[in-house]
Image (cartoon, rainbow, N blue to C red; front, top):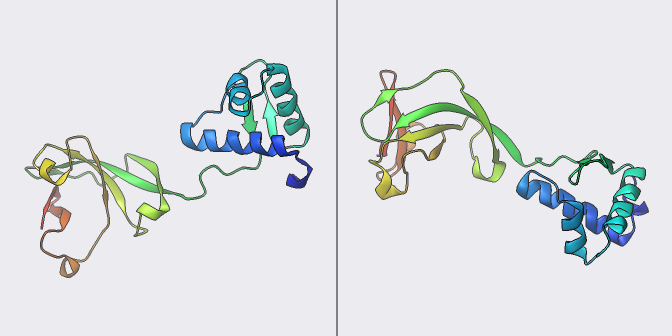
Amino acid sequence: MMPDTLTKIERRILDYIVDSLKRNTYQPSIREIGKRFGIKSTKTVSEHLQSLAEKGHIERDASRSRGVRLIGVDLAPNLLNVPYYGRIAAGEPALLREEIVDTFGIDRKLVSAPDSFLLKAEGDSMKEMGIFDGDMVLVEPTLREELKNGDIIAARLDGEATVKRY
């Protein structure tokens, strides 16, 4: 791939497709691309996309309005896969799962410890702290001696877990 071979409009269209995929997880349609750049003709947009394909930046499926696949672009370089272990009680302690249920891509800027994990709050005893039933809670393992009064913690006692204020 040689970025210097792109025309100014091709570079702008490619950047727009990348940004759209990062924001929406789907690419813009031919009409949306045309509207964004003031191109009235869908044929002209198709020609720009075809040129991007010929230059090795995208693959096209001309039978679909959103039939563009980026080549050689990592859309999630700043994401860290964080394990999700299921629900944690925001109220009475509940049994905590030991196995990973799923993983979620979280922006690295939000994850300060490599062993962080996610739990889903169950109950509403922490709603005053902004944690509502069904919210995902990002947990950063911390030594007990590092905790301060008022910290919000996820604690496990005898295999049961809860989220509370320390």
